[in-house]
Image (cartoon, rainbow, N blue to C red; front, side):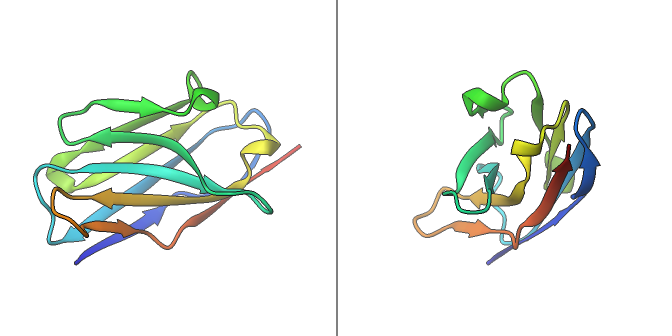
Length: 117
């Protein structure tokens, strides 16, 4: 089992910034992929960004240039720096961990990010 705890969400004005954190604990493999997804009201969940254990990143096109994902393997923690936030970025942001074994796929509870205009 892997537990994921997100932090750093909240309310911010348009143009502002937030930094999300996701700390993983439990049966963590050194080789893994972690990432952030988000779900806005009335919409499907979508990829924000992912990062592999060796630091390779991948972003949704709409997030490139504004969001930066990073990780600290020593702390089993990933981060999402979000800049130039807009009201359409309002969503529940969830952290995901995927290990190398089948079924090793875990989600955090999600954290609310609200951007006011």
